[in-house]
Amino acid sequence: MKILVVGASGATGRLLVKDLLNRGEKVTAIVRSTEKLTELLNNKNLTVVTASVLELSDEELTKHVQGCDAVASCLGHNLSFKGMFGQPRRLVTDATRRLCKAIAANQPEKPVKYVLMNTTGNRNRDLHEPISLAHKIVLALLRLLLPHMSITNRRQITCARM
Image (cartoon, rainbow, N blue to C red; front, side):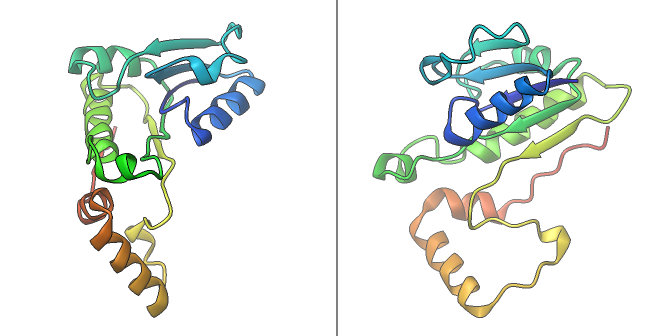
């Protein structure tokens, strides 16, 4: 299986890449810096692309997802003032939209799985999960105070069926 992981140098991404490599999967990781992946860099099943996912061209993204069986996004905002209120505000939303477009551009013969390693405060609305009043209040406060959550949660991102 060939898998593309974006945000592979973060806390979740590093664990995902390590687990995939331990299972013998072929992984391409897009990271801004390889500094936090040093223990994995010698693995023959790992290809590292050093770039910001939002700065790659559409053509480059399309090339990186070509032949992938799955794409996993572990992108997120750091829990710091700059991470919560700085740019890019719509990192996860914009990256997901662009990656899904790149997958569709390749016109794959079989479906490509897209996995969004989401953050607390987001949910899959398609599952109609029950939410307590206290949970709704906490989420409303977070959306009010954290700009990237209000943008991400109010937009439904749709990947074309492939």
